[in-house]
Amino acid sequence: MEYEFVHDAITGAAKAKFSYGHEVIGPWLEVEIGDNTEKMRDLLTAIANIDSGKNNEIMITGREYSVTFSHDDVIVQNNSSINGEAQEMPAELAEDFDDYEQSCSSSCGIDDFRQLLLSWAKFTNTLQ
Image (cartoon, rainbow, N blue to C red; front, side, top):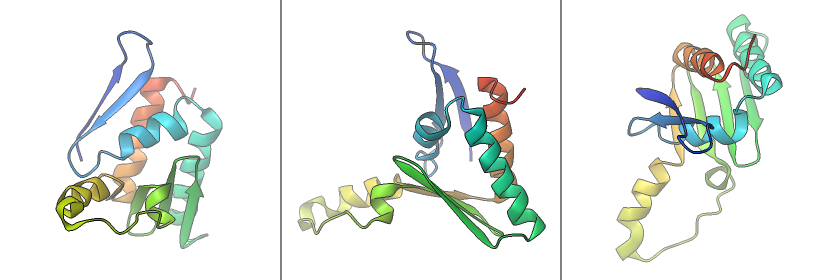
């Protein structure tokens, strides 16, 4: 998983760009976490609880995206893909939808995700 953090040239807002297959993590970081210290601590606590065996799985649902932690991996996905809001579509659009659907969900290892969160926290000055 490759990523880059940048500041928007106009607004100064923190932006996250991710490699193919992990694109959904960028908007999740921007929309659900931003520079919110409490949310960052909640995520790091969830990872610690999984690592310690206190929990087998933890799902944190946000406004637009959700993240699920387990011993094996972390899955970030758009809430519409969880709720099954996708409807039946014509065959002509099915191929394009497959690309869209892949950009609605992404997974990675829990250690990589922890490092990602710490990097984002450093970039946004979220944890002091």
